Length: 338
Ligand code: NAD
Ligand code: UDP
Image 1 (cartoon, helix red, strand yellow):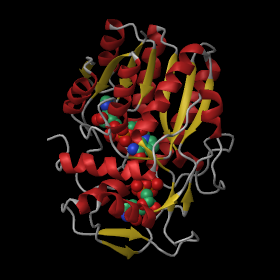
Image 2 (cartoon, rainbow, N blue to C red):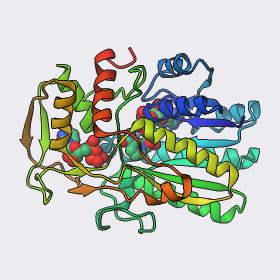
Image 3 (spheres, helix red, strand yellow):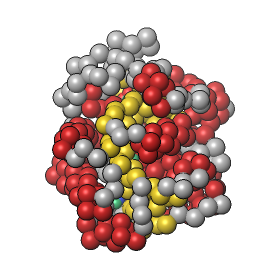
Image 4 (cartoon, rainbow, N blue to C red):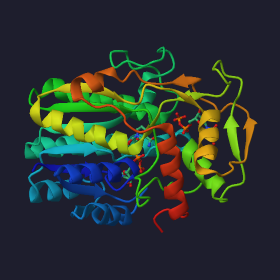
């Protein structure tokens, strides 16, 4: 079976993707520097699948480390998850974000070129649609102006991949624009383990529910949406992981430069998330309504038709599944992988 290198594969989305790839029969190699993860996630991936992962502790910017990985393994395709992803931190430390996120991409592309590896899938984000495009977002829309350095790194890296694919006719690239991944593997063994105070909604909700934080602040209830709170396209991380398997199958069979939205196409509001979480898990989530958070868009959701048409992929899990699985992970692992 083909060998797939997951750069940043010990993280939240990478570990779930590793499970789905292994269960489909692919061989999985992971390179991660554990800057936002731990090897424990991969140990659990192995337990869950009864398969082994070749694991390298490596900084993906480091071309010497990458050379060792590429020379020791005949890699068929790379999925590039490695990156820093906290929006607020990127505003405070833009240089660190540009350095890490762009260098990982350049080092991977250069090393792939050196070793003749021709297939790469990149973790992009709905953030590249920017502020001006109307919802639902379509892959044919132009990238817009981002509101923070994290978003700009994604936008710039998309440009780098497009230019590289244009110049190297044998290089195949798939840019996957994720919407809002939440949830966890239904086993409760792997999930999202943010360090410090969570930036994202669902980990904050679960930490309030488990008593680690006192109260969720809902950022704004005066948006032009049905209940006044922002809407997002929340997607179960296992559905997202399965989208990667479909993208791998596609890229191994087709020479391509394609962009796919990975979302459900259905927006839910912050209030709906909190209410659904409380209802399906029978727990209370203390919350108050506060001021808007700078840079937030009122609405963000995908048109997910292309992924269905071309990859044969669509989401299968419900918002209830997302809330239940997030809680199951949090309850079983109140301090993450520790
Ligand atoms: P994550 O932080 O859990 O995973 C990223 C992994 O990359 C971590 O394991 C981290 O240790 C590793 N990493 C970072 N820099 C590295 C480096 N220089 N060398 C080696 N490893 C490095 O995040 P995630 O949620 O799994 O996200 C994966 C990718 O998807 C990221 O690129 C992220 O920007 C993108 N993305 C995430 C979301 C989201 O909401 N989670 C949304 C859109 C896009
Ligand atoms: N949100 C919130 N309180 C929080 C964290 C997030 O009300 O403590 C809201 C935020 O304003 C947004 C939604 O939840 O409308 C999703 O935010 P997240 O940071 O998870 O994703 P993104 O903003 O990147 O879509």
